Image (cartoon, rainbow, N blue to C red; front, top):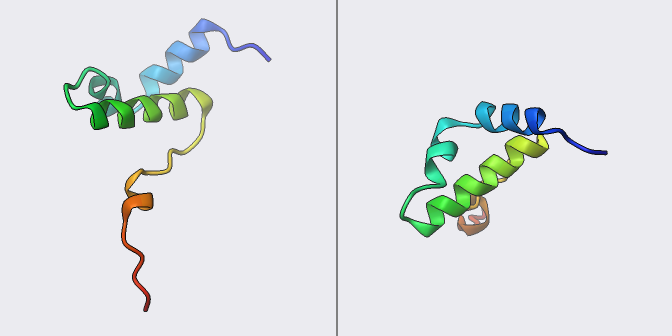
Length: 60
């Protein structure tokens, strides 16, 4: 299956504004998070926040 450029452009434009701006940020972690968000917008998937992996597991 091939995705045309108009579909990709529309997906990028529908991505959150912070992600579109974030790919130009000086902070490497923010650029990485923004790039993942844009990739998820293009693929049509929900991104898994990185902080979920870094969050401490608390037993209740």
